[in-house]
Image (cartoon, rainbow, N blue to C red; front, side, top):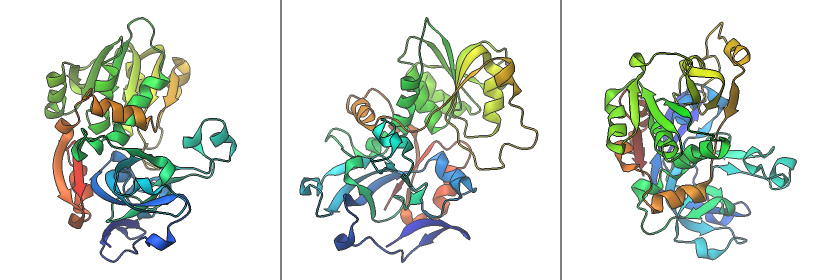
Length: 327
């Protein structure tokens, strides 16, 4: 089968990747044929050396279950699904303590120890699956994973009064976070570098500013860093008031922060720093089903698996928000 594979020589299209065999599916797992896949900033960072990952890329998908292991309910076959990316043991202290996404023995789809979804077929545990309602088409369903990540921010914040909130970054995740956070009792703005991207905020009725027009006056109660860049953390710290809260959604490859990177504002200004990663899939599916968020406007380009490394090249270009991939 064809797959986009990252190895020591870089990213390439493998035309003869070993295809999962139905009769050899691991216990509890299912075989999925993806119908849409989404390129994420994490995929771009993996290509730069993040997590030292090698294997098939991709973790955002919607697809159809084609086969299941003998210990899995056959009712899954033929169903359209999305899937949580953390594949866990269920037995360690993290799993038993309600933090399964931090399982000590986890693999992560297309990120750590497990081939991803940028392929004609891939496997995932059945317990990770969520059925997609008929009223949510593939173009929207493929956004479940990043929307869940945006919703996780809300779970981690305590909103008191009517705080000033800045979403820093006008990429795919930043624009999702801006939409989600705008539903809270808060004054929310999105700050970025691209007028065209920020124009979507105008469509949604969300305040927005170009970074070059924003004074770094340490007056924000909460800053959510979705820049996907090393400089985002420095900018976020400069925006926050003392004892403000920084939510860090950005992951960058080792060495990208540069020499002499200064974290002293965290101590000097007594900032609260929250790392934020994966989120609630069921809630994300519900938001899409209710059309509570606009994801279709984020689609910049559609490409094919056969376009190979060019898919990631397109996703990394300025002005591009979301690249969707089809088999």
